[in-house]
Image (cartoon, rainbow, N blue to C red):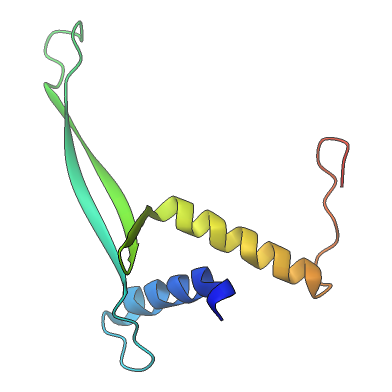
Length: 99
C-alpha cells in the first residue's frame, strides 16, 4: 500500500474535513495545516494602497514531510489517472501530437 500512500493521505484529509475526528483507521502521521503569512507592500505602490498583503499557505504533513496541499492533490490526481488507465477505464489522451 506504500505505493498508494498519496491516496491514503487524501482519504484521511477528506474524512477528517467532513467529520473533524477520524474514529476508525486514523493515521496520526497525517495532518493538514493552514499558515497565514504577511508580505510587505511594494515600493512604488499607489498612494492609499495596502501596506501589507496577507496570504494563506495550505500544507499537508505526512510524518516529518510537509508539502503544499496543491502538490499533494496534483500527485493524487495523477495517481488516479494512471490507475484508471491501467484498469481500462480511461483511454490514452491525445496531447501535443502524442499519446
